[in-house]
Length: 155
Image (cartoon, rainbow, N blue to C red; front, top):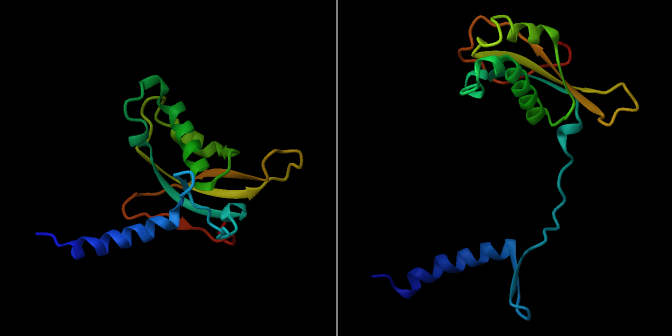
């Protein structure tokens, strides 16, 4: 059997935690989200950075028709780069494009190793301050490869 004291302690802890996120207005009887006064840290998206990723195209192209596979692979890499680097302006290197199309429109490689470089935009009248350059990295095997940060000196 549950005693009243055994149920009360977890309930009190839950209520105290919940009050951090919700505020109850007793006059209106309304529950609203509590405002937090904590300052957010500066976003790291404005930094120039370079990383190497392995993109699994096989799972991203599953169920795509034969004649749309290579064009969709380009779009998926563009979407992946935009998500990882946080820049809407993504530029794909011609060597990566040639590699994706090397076996034809329908036999796209299962995986591809890419280097994503977030760079400053030299064009002053551009809407975006930064862009992402996606380049191809040839590898013998994809086994035990991790996402790696690349130093500016290695570029």
